[in-house]
Amino acid sequence: MDRFDAMRAFVRVVEAGSFTRAAETLHMSRTSVTQLVQQLESHLRVKLLNRTTRKVNVTEDGAVYYERVARLLSELEDVEIGLPGNAATPRGQLRVDVPSPFANMVLVPALPAFHAQYPEIQFEMGASDRKVDLIGENVDCVVRGGEILDGSLVARRVGELRLGVYAAPAYLARAGTPAHPAELVDSHHRIVRFRWNRSGGFPYAMHRGEETATVGGTHILSIDDGNAYLTAGLAGLGVLWLPDYMAREHALAGRLAPLLTDWRIDPMPLHIAYPPNRHMSRKLRVFIDWVSALMAQHAPLPG
Image: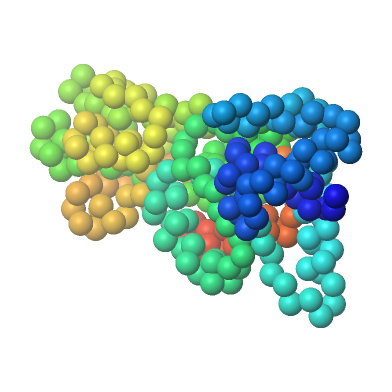
């Protein structure tokens, strides 16, 4: 048994969730991958995987072994790539989770440029606004707006999202255009409420000179997905608080109207967060640096 090949096969099976998908990514037969994992278990005298006809689950011992081996293989890859004269580029699978509007409007449209520079990095991307268990779900990093309060994660601030207040023309024709944030709590006004399950969220503090207003308001819809939140505002269900990158195209096309433009909202920080107990592979480093450069165009940090 080649122990390196066996460890690599085991790691791919855990990440892919099946022997078949692991074999496809390794360009090996399913039988070969199965034999390598069985030989590894025999060598270690430990059961690493529970197999059923439908899926593969890692055992408790297998989970511990996976964390150590995945880090070891990643470090070995970096050592090889870092050798003088080695023209190899970062490679392998990168598991990330990003907010759905950010994925649709910023990240995915820019990925062709990243792929041209790093063609051997493969993404497994979750596009969601949910709270992700990075360790339990084996995610390398997440991109999130707001403060990162989870002290078990390392967070790097990569941008500042400017926020504005918007509503659809159909909504304003029905409810009127507010001249002051306090008007949004009137009975004839409605907001679309974004339901956060992490730090930050609604209501936002708004500032004008020495005056500060923190607005709640009545909602008919509370939602936890950014794309659906935007769609609700476009449908005239209420007033929205949006980052510039989400609102810009719709405002230019007249589908959304900016409100209370003489008021300022503190910008929302954008972070990349990752577990501190994992070796930061070169592929993760180049991705974080790339997102930082991308946000310097879309939402630059102050100073």
